[in-house]
Amino acid sequence: MFQLSFKNRLAFNFMITTALVMFGVFAVIYAIVKYNVYRDVNSDIEHEIALHFSEMDFDKDIFKWIDVEEWKEREHNRLTIDPVFVEIYKPDGIPVEKSPNLKKDNLHFYRNIHKKHFVDTTLHRQSIRQVQVPIVRNDSIKGYLSIAMSLEEENVVLDNLMLVLIISAILVLPLLFFIIRYIAGRSIRPIIRITETASQISRQNLNLRINLPPNRDELFVLSETINSLLERIETAVDREKQFTSDASHELRTPLAVIKGNLEVLIRKPREKEEYEKTINYCISEINRMNNLVDQLLLLARFENSQIVLQKQKIALNEIILESLERLSPLIKSRRSVINFKFDELFPVTTDAYKASIIIENILSNAIKYSEVGGVVDIHIFNENGYVICRITDFGIGISKQELQDIYKQFYRAKSNKFSDVKGTGIGLSIVKKLCELLGVSIDIQSSEKQGTTVALLFKDDDAPSGISEGS
Image: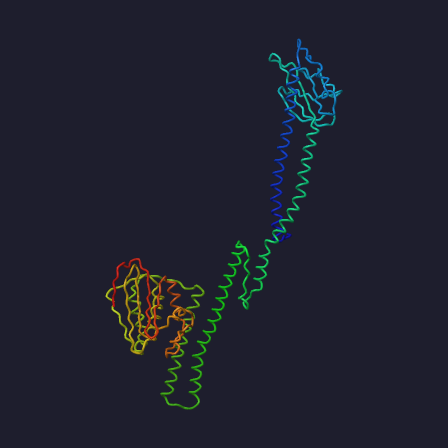
């Protein structure tokens, strides 16, 4: 099937719609004019009926004119100027009298009609409007009066009107099509520019943007929306590139370290203790790589929306105690002091496994970035319908300028980069995503060389509104 362009289709549809409206309007105009023309003709005929009835008389059922001069009027004798044709019949339809202008012709008689009846017919091949009226005297029909008037002039008027309307439609509709086509072409020009710009955008030049039109109309909103989409795509692609680069770097670094240590190890025979030391170091690097891969897989599941929540009511105390148990080797190696006192249970409705990842990451950071033998305080309390867990360390802290970047993937604060603590830089990114997933609010306050406080707010409908603090 032949496909029209958008502007041609728009112009064609508009032309069809306009044509239907025009034909409807023209039909109404024609009907109104025809109605008025026939009303005037009927009015003239009615006048002639009244006039002839007033001039008519019967003497013992014999018809006669009161005023014979009426028949000598020009409209009764000639056919050229507004002729009026009159014929009188007996009840059985036999003509009694007729106007001279009928000559040898007769008006048509309708035998089975006994009331006033209008009809359009022809006489001398001319259109006429005829009426047949019964002549009633003393409640009996004495005969019939037929009067007819020419419709030639009226038909000329109606024919001319029809011709004008048809010619108007023939001229207006094509002209309208090209006008609408031109206007549509100008209207969609910004869309063409949008299409051309969009077709030039690829992965290599995502920085291209569509020029916004001067008028703040629907096209402006469309262009703005596309630009906003391009910005999000560019940000996502840049983030993907950065993530790939950082992940590759984080994986290559321990591999290079392991390779270097092993190459040094095999250059010459060494003592057993040196072998054990190097192997243990390589194992720690492999464990670090394994932890990084696990975290990368968890992030990938976040990006693919493959995380399924299994919420249940559980005491937040239990999650913290289990996390501390898993971190016990780190706590012993750092000789950290963990201060907590749980005098009561603090139930929350959450996914226990994912909440434990959050708690474990925060506790791990608090321990690792504190001095050896440092103190970590854990407080849990209820406040305004929330169960709040506050974890405070007194370690190296983070500067206020860097706090806004701590949730970025592979980001590590400058103070952390110069410490002896090894990390991946994606722990807090995972924590942030899990908090959003579980509906947990997180707030981090930190000062450089003074420590860091992390507050987690778990929403729980059963939590009391008062404050009950354990330290």
